[in-house]
Amino acid sequence: MDNIDGISKPQIHLFDFDGTITVSDTLLEFISFAAGRWMMLLGFALHSPLIILMKLGLYSNHTVKQRVFGWFFRGMSESQFNDLCERFAVRRAHLARPGAVQTLRRLVSQGHTVCVVSASMDSWVRPFMRNMLKGAGGDVLVSGTRVEIVDGRLTGAFASHNCYGQEKVARIVEMLPQLADSRRAWHVTAYGDSGGDREMLAFADEAHYKPFRAEGGGRRQTLGEVVRFGVVGVAATLLQYAVYWVMVSMTSPTLAMTIGYAVSFVFNFIASTRFTFRQRATAKKGLGFALSHAVNYLLQMLTLNLFLAMGLGKDIAPIPMFCVCVPINFLLVRFFLKRG
Image 1 (tube, rainbow, N blue to C red):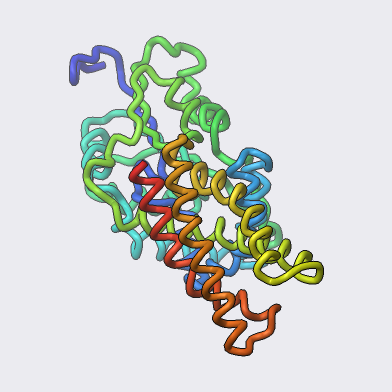
Image 2: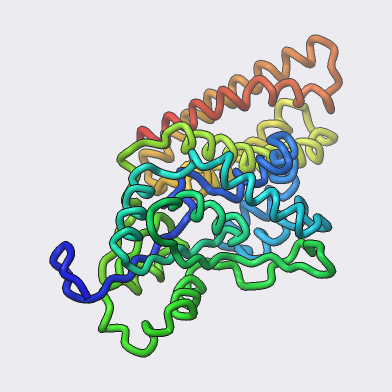
């Protein structure tokens, strides 16, 4: 029992991990660390249709995450995986937000109960937190998604529910059964940054949403946007090319590409606002998005016909066209959606 900050009840502090304590999603960071950036991009490109459906709320978060994780780590030995997690925690310690580190170390040193509840694998969250709090005079409780291991190897599946949404509250009560018995006897403070933390924040007496963001992390945010833009871009490009491939046998390449562009445009706007840049769709943003894609459409038509004139076949010409237009389109779309 204490009276710190005017709170007379004993305190429990609940933290999300990815994006709250860290500046980015550590699943992406861990896959990049373990498999390399190019292999990571390949894996996410192959799974991009499922990822988009998940972000649009049309496919299970648990199922998609499990499939992606399994693609990278199925069959790896438990000892190799645990070694990767330990090395990741040391070499990626800079991912922690300074404000979060200071707050956690203060709370632990004051003897408060602190829990970290994460959708990431507890296999790397535990060593990450252990290294972060070294010398602080205490430790934290950790609960995350658990990997399934059979005969000493990862199956690629999860041994628990994805620790997301209501599952976070269930894990908290599992770690701290006193909250189920006498909830009002405790002052609970929660820290989160996404929709997956909504239930945990609602469970608390005091909620802090994106509490450590003022200190920056812009470069990591931009990196995340680039990765998400790539996922959306791959899906939209495949959709556009599929329509083009079907239509080009019935009409001119320019008209076929125009039809494909129109179909992918609708998908792209929804995915870009809700997933890539995480902005609320408004008429102003829609107008800016349309303008950026009008510029991109003209550039695509120009480069497509240029490559056709250079002698490339109509099945091949779209490939260098996309290589020229995609980076320019990213900058235009980012500018209009962020600005609007």
